[in-house]
Image (cartoon, rainbow, N blue to C red; front, side):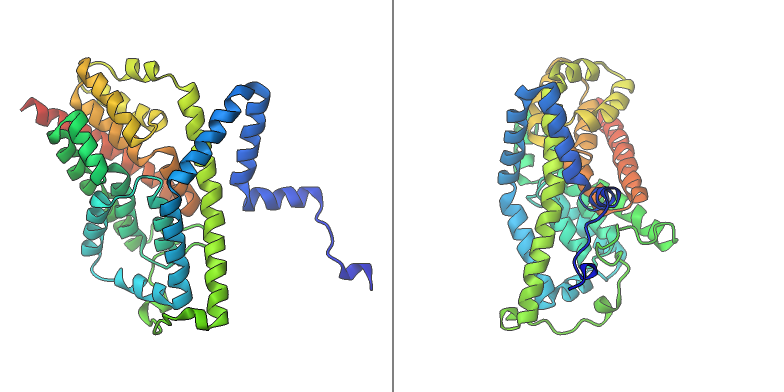
Length: 350
């Protein structure tokens, strides 16, 4: 047998390029751990515990969404699901925002569902509406917010979540309709939400797909691919979050967000992006600050900006869509947080 018939090893440069483009999250994850081992080895254990604990906590969401996505692809039900999102754009966006505002998904648990929706061709506009609203409010968050910050605050945050979703979904729809957002998804994810032939002319699904070896193989392949994709990005997100918890003092956040007027709302909007840990941990922090005299509008701006752009949510957006959509996502989040924080401040003055 000729040596040319054997697989040839890739040159180091080509191997590195392949790993960087295909497995960038794992490389960054490994480099961060290496840096921790060299600079602060005592933090390795807590960071690893944070990553594994967070992954375990969202495992039910991951498993359910992965299985549903793989089942939809294997049976052909993905065509019907995608077709269900090809109605009137205004209705789809409104329903997406409303579903996001009342769904029991956190910013981490919503990610596999978003990935599945995009992968089966659901238009980006209603998905973005759901994406923006879902991290901000859910039933348990509503109860906790009402208990810590008051019922008025909880109701206002729920209305803001739905409003943010509608606003973001409408902006995305208008930009896609005008041709500004062409093929917004990264290569290999979905069909861009433009409604391909499989959405217009779906074939009848085969519900008992396990009788067809080809469909069983597709189920297994889709489940594995989705699992690996979500695992690497979520692991990186939770590792970065652990470093924020370890190295960003809570006192610094407290000092930065104090004060009155419009400036605290601006600062809260900007600081909320890097300093936001998670929705539940942020509530007592904001409650303490408000007891110390911080205006409610700044607290609302912090919760809105940080909730939408928290590390798990932001990294998921980065992983699924191209940079211009990611930039739009951040811009909508920051603008919406500032405007809603200002409006809530004015409301409390009435």
